[in-house]
Image (tube, rainbow, N blue to C red):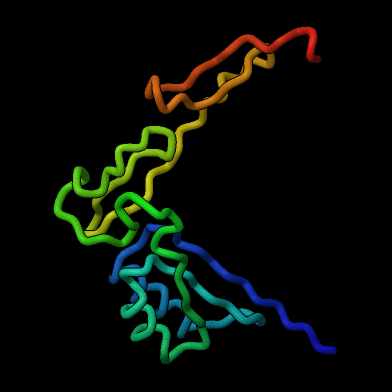
Length: 136
């Protein structure tokens, strides 16, 4: 059995049409000895198909949203307020280049081994509770 290497890059909800074209130009100049794919944000799929068609690069995308409720990623927008799903603990959503992008969760880790750290949706902040010494 001949196994070849496949390298897949995921832009998450980053990138632009210009960056897709620039990446395709780089791919057309020289190619590594492996199969490769780039997963772009859903709204950039048509640009990736057009740009990567003349290269050996494959393209794909992640789901727009795995949530049953809330604003789906990739939804068209004019301001960040149109993207905000009202959930604190899943990060801040943004509107960039006319599309909603998922938020990045901030870490609640306070670097203190004596606390249990978690995000509190009710409080809208991180909570650092003392670790039960008897449980250790």
